[in-house]
Length: 161
Ligand SMILES: C[S@@+](CC[C@H](N)C(=O)[O-])C[C@H]1O[C@@H](n2cnc3c(N)ncnc32)[C@H](O)[C@@H]1O
Image (cartoon, rainbow, N blue to C red; front, side, top):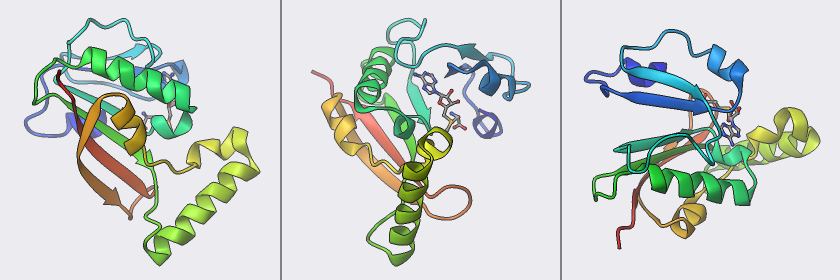
């Protein structure tokens, strides 16, 4: 939330959600109009169509397939049914088409397998299929290979019927 808060202009209202009180305690001070809630991302206490943008930062790859589907269904419920509504997903991921990516992918998978309780959250995930199954159309993907975890950012829009 702090990275978003430092953007100019920043959103007037933002609500962060995590089900860990320990993680929320690390959020610190937020701008006026922003808040952090203790809640499950599969079933938040927020109203339908309340958001223009939903961001899932480093969440989907730590979840089982059925929980990913539940989080994405919740994101759809929260997003206003407008073409401009956006879902932004960030997951740990390494591009296996490159040598560095193959090495990083192998290392991350080996760590996640070796100690699932401690390092399971490092297992890479490309959530494109989950997004499509949940009724989103991926529009843009950006690979972040340097600085922090190798990561994939996907921008998607809800399919409107
Ligand atoms: C790798 S951390 C990422 C934390 C933060 N979103 C970030 O980008 O730095 C994964 C977080 O997902 C949270 N989490 C896992 N399952 C969740 C769920 N069903 N609802 C809400 N938060 C969840 C965990 O408590 C943990 O804080």
